[in-house]
Image (cartoon, rainbow, N blue to C red; front, side, top):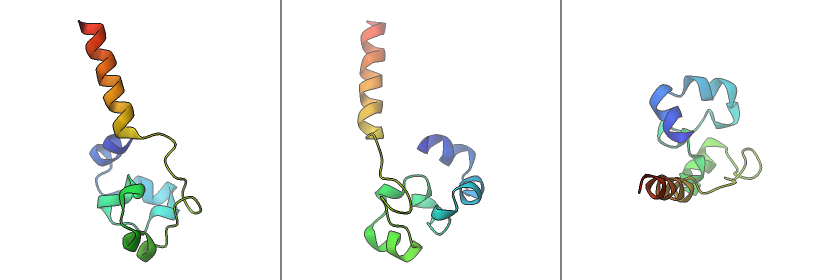
Length: 75
């Protein structure tokens, strides 16, 4: 979901419209607010776990596991 947002909505128009609680974030963190420094979140008025949920899964870890699975299938 992060990569797709960055690729197809690079200016964040869609997410700012439909997820207004993130609208104050800079584009760099708009699609992954959990990676933003505390100062950026505070300046943008975003409180993770309150205004916007914390991640349920670790996307990097789940991607790695999926790629490992694909490699196992291909072998």
